Image (cartoon, rainbow, N blue to C red):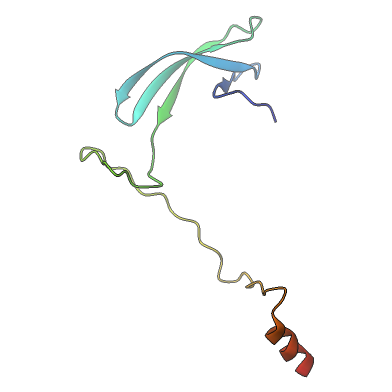
Length: 97
């Protein structure tokens, strides 16, 4: 897997595209101007950065911003509960059968 060091891949050649400038449209939306670092490609374009949801609430929330909370993942009820490798009571019960 190729790493881009905070940059995004160019949609045409796959090389890193560097942020040249950006401007805030709102508190949750930003436009970023990108330039491909591959001189043979030369692509320049615009990307959008959108803040969509909250994972952990801010300790200093902005009352004008309303972001939904992310849905937390829960373990399935159908997943078996693992038993401890040194649980003597389970082994004794199994031997009694």
